Image (cartoon, rainbow, N blue to C red):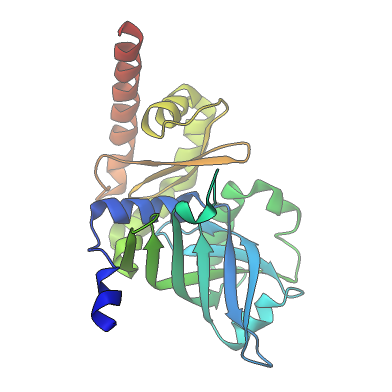
Length: 259
C-alpha cells in the first residue's frame, strides 16, 4: 500500500512550481485551518489573503474571530487556495500550504510592508485594517501539496514557493513607488501585460504587487498573475524588464492583428 500511495505523487517540475506560485500569488481568499485551543479540534474558516513580497501568505484577522486566538495559542495552520470553476470542483487546481503563523507587531517595518501589500490587494480592507482588534499574521510556508487536477499531485517545499536573498529587501524598498508610477503613467503597458501575458480579458487593469518572479494585476475583483521571463536578481532590473515586456507584448498584438 505504501508503494502504491507513493506512486500518486509526481516529480515536482518547473510547470508544477509555476502553477503553485500562480495559485498563491493570485488568491484573494482561502480556507484557513487552525487547532481549536480548548479541544484541539480542527477549525476551518475563510480569510482574505495577500502575499508578502517573498511569497509568504498574509492574512488580516480580528480578535473576535475564532481563528485568531487559535493562532496565538498554536501557530500551526494550513491554508487552502484555489477557486473552483465550471463543472466538477475537484477537477480544478488547488494548493494546500502547511504554515507557522506569526502576528506582526504594529509599527514595525515588516508590519508596514505587509499592510501596504495587503491593502494593495484588498483595498476595501482599509475600512477596518487600522482598528485595534485587527492584526496581520504572516504565514511562513513549511511545505505544500499541489493538486493540479485529476492525477496531478505534487509535494513542494518552501524554496519552491518563496523568494530569498538580497532582492527581496531591495525590491521592497522601491516596489510601491514603481507601482504608483506604472498605474499613474503607464496603464497602457499594464493592459498589455494582462492581455498578452496572462491572457486576461476586460479593461481597467492595474498593478497590485511586484516581486522577484513577476507581478500581480487587478481589475475590480479579478486578479491575474504575470511572470517575468526570468526572476529578477537585482531591483535595478525591474524597469528594463517592464519596458521590454511592454514592447514584446505590443509586437505580439500587431502580429496577431495582421494574421
